[in-house]
Length: 197
Image 1 (cartoon, rainbow, N blue to C red):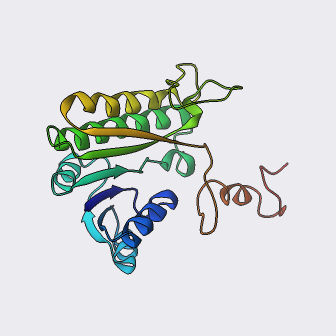
Image 2: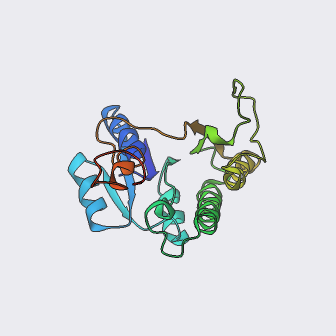
Image 3: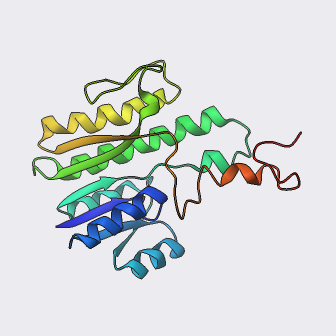
C-alpha cells in the first residue's frame, strides 16, 4: 500500500513512518524543508514537497496514494510568538489544519480509501473517563480543533474511510524534540524546568 503521511518527520509521524515501512508499505512523506526531505530519504521513505498550507501539493499527494495519514499540525505558535498572541496563532493553525484535512479528504472522495487524522484528547470533557463514543467538548481548551474532527468525519458521506485518532496532549519518548524537552529552554541559566524567577 502506498501511504501519504503528513507530519512524517515529526515525533509521532516518524514513528508511523517507521511502522509502515517495517510492515512493507511504501511511504511518501510531506516535506516542507530540505532537512525533512533528507530525513525521509534516510529511512527509506519517498518525499513529496509541500506544506499544510499548500493545498495543491496536499491534493496531489493524496490523489497519488492508497491512503493518507494526517499527523501534522502547525506548532509554530509555540516557538515563534513574535506577535505575542498565542490565541490568534493557535486559531490560525487550527484553520490551516481544517483546510488541509478538507483537501486531503476531497482528493480521496468516492474512492473508499482511508484517511486517518490525528487529534487530541484535550477535546474531551475533563475529569471523567473518555471513550470512543465521546464527541468533542466545545468548552475544551483545544476547541478550535473540533472543526478538524468534524471535517474528517464528514468525509465518510463522501466515500472516504475516515477516522480520527485522539492522542494525549503530550506524547513523548526517546528522540522527542517537542513539548517535553522545550521547557528546559525557558531557564537554562537556572538549570530547571519552567520559567525563570
